Amino acid sequence: MGVTLIYVLVLGGYLLAQFLIGLAARRRAASAEGFYLGTRSIGAWVTAFSFVAAYFSSVVIIGGGGFGYKFGMATLWVGAGNTLVGMLLAWIVLGARTRAMTGRLNTITMPGFFARRFDSPAARLISALVVTVFLALYSVSVVQGMGHVFEVLIGVPYALGVLISALVIIAYVAIGGYTAVVWTGFVQGIIMILGVVLLTLAALNRAGGLAQVFSRLGEIEGGKFLATPGVWGWSGLISFTMIVSFGVWGMPQLVTRFYSIRNVNVLRLGTVLATAGGCMALLPYFNGALARVLFPNLARPDLAIPMLVKETMSPFTSALFLAGVIAAGMSTFASVLIVAVSSLVKDLGRDSFGAKLSPEREALVSRLVSIGIGLAAVLVALKPPAMILVITGFAWAVIASTTLWPYLFGLYWRRATAAGVVAAMVGGSAVALVWLALKNPLGLHGFVPGMIVSLLLLVGVSLVTPAPVAAARAAFGDREPSRESS
Image 1: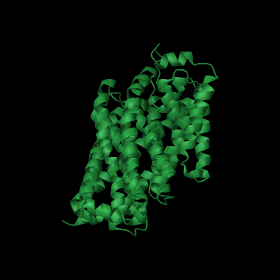
Image 2: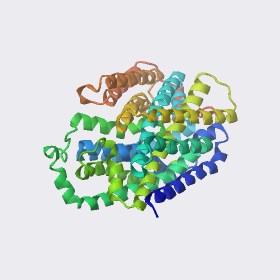
Image 3: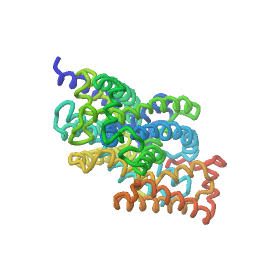
Image 4: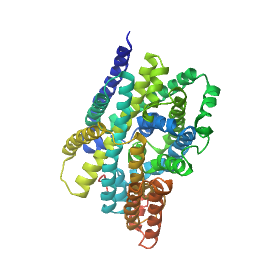
C-alpha cells in the first residue's frame, strides 16, 4: 500500500468521524443557548481531554517544536509551566468557582459573566470586542499549523492543507455547535497525545538515544542550547512562559469548559486527567530541540516537527501523527470559533446593541457567522504573517490583559467593582498593544506590563469606588439572580 494512500485512508476516516459527531450533536444546537454551550452535563473525561486538545493544539505541537528548534532545551520550561500552571492550578483555582458561580448567575459566555457579576454592560462590550477580534487572529495561527503539516507530510500545497482542515471544522461547528466542539475535542485530545508520544519514541531511536542527543546538542551555540535560559534569555523565557501558562486563566475558549461540566463533584477526577494529559506539552519543545541534531539547517523553525515525522516514522505511524496534529488544530480552531461567534452575535449583537432575535433565529445567525469568521481566518492564513507562536503570543497577551484579572477577581473578591474592571480591561489591553507595537522593550513580552497595569487598575479603582453589594450577593449565592441567561 502506497504512503499517500495510507495517509488518505487514515486522515479521511478521521475527518469523516469528526463530521459525523457534528451531525449527531445537531439536535442540541437548535437554539442559541444550545449552540453556544450545549448542556451543563459534560463529564470529567470529556471535559479534561477536550480542554487538553483546545489548549495545546497544533500551535504547541508545531509552533512549540519551532521554538525548541530555535531556542533549545530551555523551552522545556514553557511546557512545564503549561502543565503545572495552565492545567493543574487552573483547574484547582478556577474550576469549582466557575461552575458554581456561572450556574447561579445563569451565564453562558465570559462577557456575559462580566455583565452579571459586576452589573456592567460596558465590561461585556469591551471584553466581547477584544475576544472577537483577537480570538479570530489566534485562529489564524492554528490554521497555519495544520497547513504546514499537510505541506510537509503529504506533499500537498500549503494552501490546500489549510482549506481541507479548516472547511471540515467550519462545517461541524456550524452544524453541531458547542456539543460537537467538546465531543470532537475529547476524541482529538486522545489522538493528539498518542501521536506526540509515538513521534518522541521514533525520533529518539533515529538520533541514537538520549545520551547521544544531549551530547550533540551540547555542541550547539557553545553549550547554550542545553542551558537555561540559553540563547533565549531570562526575560524572553519567563514572559513567554507566563503568557502561555498563566495567560490561559483568561482565555474564554478554555474557561468555558468549566461552565458545562456536570457538577463540581467530577472536577477532582477531571483535574487529574487534564494534568496527566497536559504533560505531553513538554514533548513538542523537546522534539524541536532534538530535530536540530538531525536537521541543522531548516529554512523555517516551524518545519522542525513535520520534518522529524517525515524522516523518523513509518507511513502508518506518521499518518497517526498527522491525524493527531490535525486533531489538535481542529479542536482549538473549533473552540475559538464557537467563542468568537458567541461574543459577536450574543454579547455584542444581542445584548450590547439590542438586536431582536428569536432563539432559533439567533442559532441560524450564529451558524452563518461561524462560517464567515472561519473563512476570514483561512484567507489570512493563506499568506501567514509570522511564526505560529508569535501570532499566538500577541493574541493571548491582549486577551489575557483584558480578561484575566477581572475574571479571577470576579470569582474570589466581592469588593471588585464595575469601574475597576472596566479600567483594568481598557488599561491592560492598551498597554499590551502599545508594548507589542514597540517590539517588546526590555525583552519583556507585552503580556507582562499589560497584566501589571490591569491588576493595579482593578484593585486601585475598586477600592475608591462603591462596593457592588447587590451584584456580589447574587454571584456568591446570597440571593438568586434573574432567570434569563446572559
